Length: 241
Image (cartoon, rainbow, N blue to C red; front, side, top):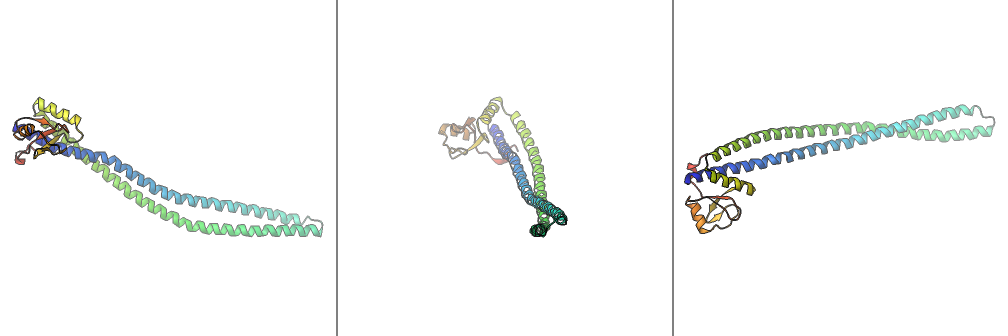
């Protein structure tokens, strides 16, 4: 019976590692998604700056178009001035043209101001792009490392499952069946040590008779509270792995 407890203690150690690795494997997709979110935020930050730049370019094109239209209007208006017949009509046309010339000068100033602003903003866009590219490269590198780490953990996880299968194959059918039932019932490691009359997993006191049977390697029992298989401490030098 003590040999059976050695198997159970070995299974407990394997299951603890399996449980930890399973948690690490489950966390990897979460961490990868978080890195993708950070890449998305970095890209969104750059795109916001780029959108400002594009909007400024549109403003420049619109102002330049308005300026061309005003220049065309003035050329046509000045040509028409040559066709006026009276001095009053000439003065009226001249006054109107002066107004349009003032508007043209304002448009010219606006175009120059926007062009100057656009030129300065190009540096901002370039810097924002550089920051994003650097950040995206760092995050992508982190993703690659995390994916490789996941592959390594997966290999270790699968090796442990095979090792557990090997230990189970050496156990008697009744204990193996008990272990499988506990595994289906319990979330996490289905085997727990007992210490000072208590289950170390749920801290519930075990009935003295049951406790003595486990402690004396006389029978295999499950905790009446958490349903884990109870094992007594064994000499680690006798462990199977």
